[in-house]
Image (cartoon, rainbow, N blue to C red; front, top):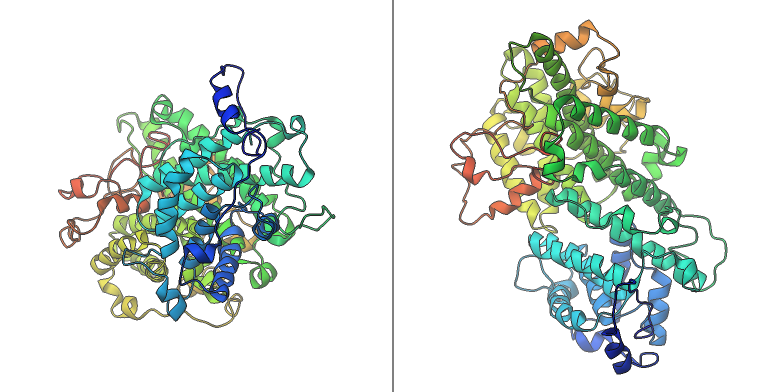
Amino acid sequence: MASGRVRFFGPTTNMHLLSRSMLDPGKSTETYWPISALVRDLSPETHDYLIDLFFDCHNSNVHIVHKWAFLEDLKSGDTQFYSNFLHMCMLAEGWRYADRTRPDIKRLACPGPDSSTFHTKARKMAELELTKPGGIPSIQAFSLLGDLEAGTGRDDTGWMFAGMAFRLLFDVGLHVDPSELRLAEREVQIRHMVLWACVMNDAYWALYLGRPTMLKASDIAPACLNKDFDRLIYSQSRTYVYGKTIETRIYEALLQLMDLLGPLCETRNASKSLKPTDAQLKIATLDQQLNIWHINLPETLRWSSENVLKAPASFYLLHTQYHTALILLHRTFTTHSTDPQDTAHHNESIHFSSLCRHTCVSNAVQVAEIISMYRKRFPIKRMFVTGLQHIGTAATSIMAEISMIHSEQQSLERERLVKHLADLKMSLEEMSNMYQPAKLMTSVVEHFIRDHGNMMGDHIATTETDTANPLSELSSSSSSSSQQAWIMPIIANDTNPSTSMPSNSRSPFLSPARLQMEETATQLHAAQNRQPSFNSAEGLPFLPSTWFDEMNWEEDDTDFLNLVGLKELQALRGGDLMGNGLGMNGLAEGGAI
C-alpha cells in the first residue's frame, strides 16, 4: 500500500521499493483545493451544468467514473476516488459538450482552438501528477485528458496521455484477481469498471491511429475479464441489487463487440505473412463472428422501430460501430491483384473483391442512415467522439465507391451515394465546433462533393435535415433509392448487412464466409458489371487530384487526413494510389478510421 491505495509489483522487483515506503509511511494525508479556488470564473451553477454534461454525454458511452464514489469523496475530502486533476478533466469534457453561446461558458473559453480553461489547467496538472501518481483517479484523468487532446487535433499527445493511463493500470494492479486483495465489494466493482474503460479506450485508439493495442488479454487475470457490470454506475455506497440501466447494457454489448476487433489491430509483419487465401478465410471468420454478435443482441438492443424511438444516444453508436467494423474488415479486398493469366484464381479474386466492395458501400450507407436518424433525436454537437470515426469511415467508403462509378447507367446509384455523402458532411460540419479534426474532414468531403456532385445541382448546398418523427418514413420500401436516407436502415429487416446488397439491388450477395460454398449467377453478374477500375491490393482507390491542388496544405495539418483513412495524401498529389489500406494484406497498415 502507498498513499492509502493498492499498488502492484511483480516477483522480479527489488529493495528499491523500500525507499518509497519509508518516505510515505501509513495512510496518506493528501488534501485538495476547492475547484472554485482553481478556476476563478466557475460558479456553482455552471459547475453542476458541466458535471451533468460529462456524465450524460461522455460517461454514459464509456463507463470510466463511478458517479457516487466521486461525489462522496468530493464531499468528504477523501482522495481514493477523487482528485483535483480528475475533477478538472471532467469539467473540461463537460465544457466540450456545453452550449458555447452561454455567457458563463464563453468566459471559460481559451484563445486556443476549441479549448477551455479547464483543459489548459489539466495539461499543467498532468506534469505534477506524474511525479506522484494518485491511483485510480490518475488513471481516469489521464484517459480523459488523452481524449481531450484528440478532440483538439493533438492525436500524438492524446495517445501518449492514454498510454500513461494504461501504464498506471498495472501500477494500481487493476489486472490482478481482486479476490486476492480483500477489498470492499464496491471498490472491486469500480476497479473492474476502470479496467474495462481502459481496455475500451485502448481499442478505440488502436483503430483511430492504426496501431496495435497496448493492453493484452494475456496480461489480465481471467477473473477480471468478465464483462458483466452489476450495480455499477448508479449504485451509491450501499450495494443494493439495482437493475442495469439501458446504457450499461449497451456498454456491455459494445465491450463484446470491441473484443472481436483485435485482428483489425494486428501489426504489419503479422498480417504480411498471410497468404491471400488465408487472409480471406480470416476475414470470413471474423465476418461470421460479427454477424453472430449482431444476431444474438438482446431484444432491447436490436435495431427496431420501438427501440429507435426510446433508446439513448449510445444505442445508435453501438450500431454504427458494428457497421464501421464490417467496413474496416472488408475494405482491404475491394480490389484484386492476382495474375490475370491464372484464370481460376483471378476470377475468384474478382468474385471476392466484388463481395467486399458491396459490403463496404452497403454498411457505409447504413451508417449514414443511422446518423441521419440520430440527428432527429439528439443534437449532433453532443455526439461522443467515436461517432467522428464512424462518420469518417463511412464517408471514405462512399467516396471510394463514387470514384469507381463511371457509366451513365449507374447515374442513379451515384446520385444516391452523393446524397448520403452530403448528409455525412453536414454532420461533420456540425461536429467541427466540438472536435477540431472534424473541420479538416469536412473540407476533404466538401472538395470531393464539389468535384463529383456537380450533377446534383443545388441539392448538395441546400440539403436540410428533416426534423420530423424519425420513423415517419419507415413505411417506405427499402428498395426505393430516392428515400433511402429516411427509411429504417436495412438491419431492421432481419438481414445481415455484411451479406446484403445496397438497397437498389435486386438480390443479395452471399457472405464471404459462404463464398466457397455457393456459386450464383447474380454474384458473377455483379463481378462483371461492377469491376473496379483500378488494380491494387491495398484497398481503397485514390481520390482525383483536382481537389488536392485546392487544399491549403500549409495551413491544414495533413496528419488529420489519417482520421478519414486518407493517409499521406500530400505526398500522393501526383495521382498515385492512396496510402496502404487497413487490412490483411496490410491489416492495420493504413489509416485508423
